[in-house]
Length: 238
Image (cartoon, rainbow, N blue to C red; front, side, top):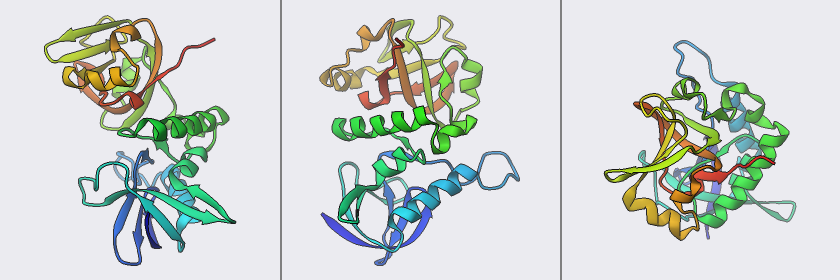
């Protein structure tokens, strides 16, 4: 495992080492530093995430592990970060999620995703951090107008899959019957085998209640494209 000393914290998931490398915590999403509303100030949730990361790693020697892509589109190295405190090794991503200062992102391997999703679920149930802010609440799939308001942002949506259909090279997980306005999750047909290999057969999700995470687009109705099974959790209610 490589390492280095943290010299500066840029935001809730980005930091700089003493050797001037700018790195980003892989596998998590934090609130944007500035909202989309013109002339609004920094989001308190973003400031809280930055403060939490500062508390965890600022000025400390950290271990760095790469488990996926080498860098993001801005050239920042994508890493999992580990820091030792009081003789205990802390995984920074898990700590941020457990505190409710970050949400689990996409593109994670199965083991990492399971651990982070469990930590996120506990933080959400307890209303910690950003989960106490209505802006970051779970959006109901039955309310497409509410989801459209999240266009261009990372969101968590929960609801029952009404039908699973194929059209061309795409599989549609439909949460309503009107494709022009209802929410749907799309999976490229060529990626379906990734879900099957993880034990998630898309056609068998019909009638199931799920939680989906990803970036909201508007194509007819609101859409989230799922690239991997870590984006879909079972959410049946007892």
